[in-house]
Each structure stands twice: as structure tokens, then as C-alpha cells.
Image 1 (cartoon, rainbow, N blue to C red):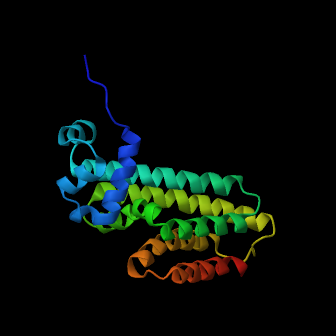
Image 2: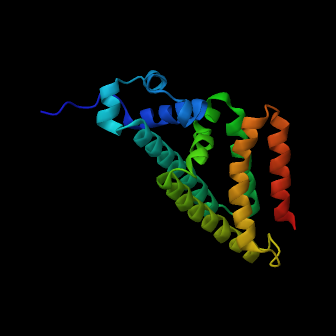
Amino acid sequence: MARSKEFDTNLVLHKAMKVFGHHGYEGTSLQILLDGLGIARQSLYDTYGTKRDLFIKAVKHYLNEKSSTVVVYLERSGSVKQAVSDIFYEIVATLQDEHRRKECLILYSAIDQVPHDPEIAALFEQDRNRLENAFHEALVRAVKQGELSPQQDLTALARYLYHSRYSLIQVTKLTDDPNVLKEITAITLSTLER
């Protein structure tokens, strides 16, 4: 009879996001990973495979979870401008929270792997398409609702919003000043006022 898992696999994925986010993929030794996850080496191999396998699963889980939240929020919002603003300020709040930021920084580690790892590159490409489309559909709705000028290049604006979200993660690695995130977010959102 197979032995049942003695740990929550979803919780372990969240712990992995924090460990990889804090140490980076290359900087995360097997021992650091096991200590951070609180599971035995054999459990890691049996459930997730190698360190790389776990990293890919954690990145995929993170992207899916966060992007699904953004897509649903954009679809269900009344005011598109307010929804985009809420999304960006939630990122700022997350990056300013010491505990939540560690999970988010897995993307910083993952982006470093994109040029060398086709599987991770494919995850980001899929996520980019999904979110750019979600932003574009919301911006089209904003034009119809009179919130946004019809002269805007909505495809370029959707692409800009997608990439601006990721730039905030890079900024967090470069400065501890919370005002920098807020200033960049304010300038980003000002593109919706044209």
C-alpha cells in the first residue's frame, strides 16, 4: 500500500518560491532547499524530482496563481483605470512586505534562467501572452467606456503595462527606498491619462 504524503504539496511550493526568491536558483543549495521546505531529501525527489524540476513547478505555480488573479480582476472590474491602478499598487504593497516579497522574487531568479532554459522561457512567453491579452482586452473596454482615448496604441500600452509590472521586481533588488516603487508606479499609471 502506498504511503500517503505527510506534507501539503501546495504549501511546499510556496516555501520553494520563498527559498528560490531569497537565494536565487544558483544560490540555492540542496541543503538550503531542504531546510527551507522542511521535508526530507527522498520526499523532494519522490514528489517533485530534481531541484530544477521543483524550481520549474514553483515558477509555473507562481505565474499561474498571480496571473489568474490579475486576469479575473481585470475582467470583473467596472473601471479599467481603477483596476490597473489597484493591480500595480498591490504589487507595490507585496514588494514592501518582507514576507510576501520573498515569494515574489522567485521571478527575479527565473528571469535570470530564461536565456539558458527553454522550458522557463516558454513559461514566461505563455504568461506574457496571457497578461498582454488581458490588459489589451481591458484597455479596449476602457476606450468603449470613455476612460481612455481611442488614439492610444492599445497593443503597445498593454505590452508596456505587462513589462512595467516586472520592472518593479527588478527595482526591489536595487533599492530599499519604498518611495521609488511608488514613484515608478505613479509614472506608469500616468500613461493611462493621455
